[in-house]
Each structure stands twice: as structure tokens, then as C-alpha cells.
Length: 423
Ligand SMILES: Nc1ncnc2c1ncn2[C@@H]1O[C@H](COP(=O)(O)OP(=O)(O)OP(=O)(O)O)[C@@H](O)[C@H]1O
Ligand SMILES: [Mg+2]
Image (tube, helix red, strand yellow):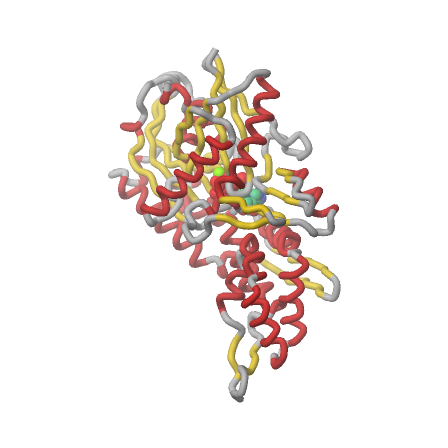
């Protein structure tokens, strides 16, 4: 009996499906989380170099008072050719080593579920890891290498939105045909495709001719969080602070590169580089906002970026259900209490929404169809819950064409449904 795993290694969440005997099942891989089907794509190394994944990683990190090394959004490093490896408590890990730890864990949980070793996997990949073709290839190679290190022998890739389309297809009656625009809005990427689906088409061998166009942008949930940090929170950490450089009497701003890194929380540990810390120490000597620079030093040394960004993400998610919320965060002598309205959220992310809208229009144009010829818009991924994202589609296609369901599992389900395409 042939068993194949489908693994959706996401920027924020990962999930597993099992294909056997022509059926697909989504399997819980993180029993400790309330939504056991999802495992947070995070790693935690404690000082004894014990490694944890998922909710357990978060629990250990919190329990240790953030003493060890916590990593998330690892997927976004895949196309980053200037990041090859990192040292964690004296041991060097390449990017594929890190991904392999997560995949190995998912594999083990899947094997415990089916009761035998499994060496076949269909891995999801975004339509664009990077707009730079060379980097895009590097990202896929690294993901493949990680899967090999995790113990998989036969590895196939499927585009994430195509997988979502296959999941959608299963809800159609046999013979029912539709042209669907798939929008998968995750943590790291927003991926799109226009695809022809047909109820009962499950085992058709080659679906390539049904994919009318594909596209994507590197703008998704993490970008919205970063933008909130930049506009609403970064001033607590010296965004507008000035200082005087040695021997001169003119004020200069804290380097944008530091603030920018601070706004991508998974990169905050990079600010621990000795030269950067020294620079910040010099800034502190003459700055007009010493308190903010102290907060900057603290977030770098105490590693609480994760909790700050959780507060930001929470506020963002709340705005999907109401018009007004607060970003609240307390850490030692730092108290943040920022009001954030839905309209304001949309305004400060206007450029991010514009990029998404531009990409939607391009993908429709490349399909050779007009919006009127598209029957259904199927939205999936956590970020598709943002009302303004839905509005972008309603403007173009009309509200009645929008379908929004299984935000977190349609991709992984579709990866399982992809199996017959590769066999
Ligand atoms: N109610 C909500 N409103 C807005 N955003 C949300 C909501 N719920 C979850 N999100 C966001 O959705 C994102 C996670 O979605 P998902 O699990 O689909 O991503 P992923 O598959 O891990 O990422 P990717 O597909 O880009 O690799 C996070 O950025 C999270 O903040
Ligand atoms: Mg995803």
C-alpha cells in the first residue's frame, strides 16, 4: 500500500495530510495546541541545546524566560542567499538543517498515526519564493535538501494555490466545471492562481493545462505586522530619536536599517552583532531620547520581540472582526498602549494592499480572461480574513463570487489530493 504525506510548511503554521488508498486525511500534528491540525512553524533551542517545535517550543521559551534561542518565519529565510547558517549555543545549523528539524518532527507524528515509515512526500511551495529566479531556485533546493535530511526519499513539489484549488474541487459535484481564482494569503506570501476545476477530476493525470495563470507577492500577514510596528510602535524604540556623532554638533537620526530590522521581528537577533550593539551604545551617549534607546537595547538583549509581535498580531486579528482595538504590551519599564482603528490599519498598509491588488490584476490578465469570466473566488490562508482583502476581490468580482473557508487546511488537504498527479 502506497502512503504519501502532504506537508504544508508554512511561514506561520505547518500541517500534514496523509494520502492512502485514494483518500486524503488531514492529521493532527500538534496535539498540544487547540487547533491540533496546525503546528506553529517555530523552533526553540534551550541552553542545553535541546530542541523543541510548535506549541512546546513556545511553552519552553516562555517558561525559560526567553533565555534560549527562538526562531520563527524560517521559511522566509529560504530564498535569502546571504543567510546560509547560524550558530546556536556553539553548534552550526544551515537553513536546511533548521527546516529539517520541523519536517522530521511532522514526519514522525505522521508515521505514528499511520503506524509505518513513510518516505514519500508532496511539499507545498509558494508560487514565488523570490522574484529573483536564482534565489527562487535556491529556496526550493534548500527545501528539498531539508526533506531529504528529514528522511524523505521521494519528494515532489506542488504550488500552494494549486493545492488549494484541488481542495476546492472536491466540494464540487461530479462534472461540475468552474474557473476559479484562488487567493492564498498566509504569513509570508500571498499566492494566486486562476485554474479550471471540475468535480470528480481528482485522479486526472496532468492538470498543468488547467492552470491558466500563477503569481504571487511577498506581502502577507508578517508584512502587516511589520507595518504596524513601523508606524505605531517603533517610536518606543527610537525610530525618531536623534543623536550627535563624535566631534560634530549636528543631530542625525538613528539609522533606518536598525529600525527596519526591528520591524521584522524574526530578524531582531541579527542586531546582536557586536558592531551594531556598539553603535547603539554610542547613540545612547548623546541621544535626545535616552529612554527609547534603552528600550531598543533591552528588546535586543532580552529577546522579547516575540511577545511584542504577538501583541501586534493579536490587534491585527481583532481588526478582522471589529473597527477599533488597542496594541497593549508591558515589559519592565516599557508600557505600550496604542489605539488602532480599522481605517487606520488600512491606510498605513495602503502600499501593501496596492501591491496585492496589482498582483491580482496581473494574474487575472495573464489568464486571458476577464473578471466576468471567472466563476468563483476561493480565498484561503489566515490573512484572507482581513476584510479589506475580501473587499479587494469584491470590487473586482462582486461579493457573490467570494468563497472563504478552511482558511488553514485547504492547502495541506490539496497537497494530499495532488498525489495521483505524481504517481
Ligand atoms: N483573523 C485574522 N485576521 C487577520 N489575519 C489573521 C487572522 N488569523 C490569522 N491571521 C494571520 O494569518 C497568517 C497565518 O496564516 P497561514 O497559517 O495561512 O500562513 P502560512 O501558511 O503559515 O504562511 P505562508 O503560506 O505564507 O507560508 C498570520 O500572519 C496571522 O497573523
Ligand atoms: Mg500557507
